[in-house]
Length: 157
Image 1 (tube, rainbow, N blue to C red):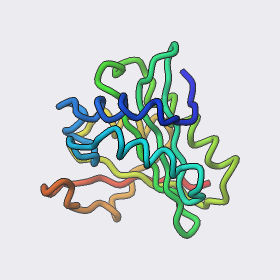
Image 2 (cartoon, one colour):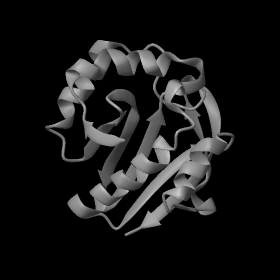
Image 3 (cartoon, one colour):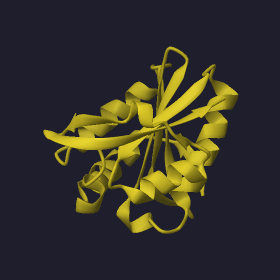
Image 4 (cartoon, helix red, strand yellow):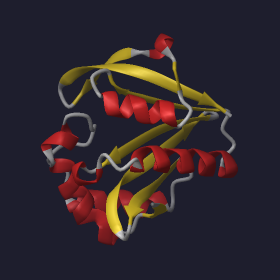
């Protein structure tokens, strides 16, 4: 497994991967996202110091995404593993490596993430990467026109 920078050549893959019904259950990306929209987002990464994202790759195969948005000394982390790549431990390994990269390269005091309450796999990934539950920040969020009950996690520097 390795993390690498996204390129616009990855845009069509990402758009297709997020359309998978299993991915759509828990991603905030809409099922209508296009390769052009993804390519524009990838192009914007280099010019935006408030965000960072990497492609998760395993044996040369695209498998997912890790991303962070920075705001007021806090990094808000997200991740996605394509359905075909689940069950290999890639998400946990990628998140741990990404956390190390964030703390080595950015002045953040804390990392936070949230996950849908029913997404047991994502909750386990967060915990394996050292995040701890932060129930005081749990909330219902409107995502894609539906209310999601979310659970919050945090990891101090």
